[in-house]
Figure: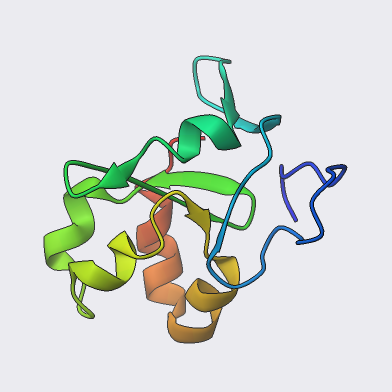
Length: 105
């Protein structure tokens, strides 16, 4: 999907349900042109710094944690992971549009 590279050595595929990511190659690029690696995404897993991956894109959900209708805990449990499948299963078109406002790259 999208900008997510598919050649890795893991047995799991991008988009699988809430899996931790282990690849270290770029998955996308920030507006600055700097590559975003899975290693970088995995650093952002706290209430003060929370990134998620949906559809091969990286989103900073930090400022949305307290606004999430399902609570912050569900987002935090997916921090640093590809949660595409879960996101797509539970969110409306409106939520998908709102997610785009959190885009890191």
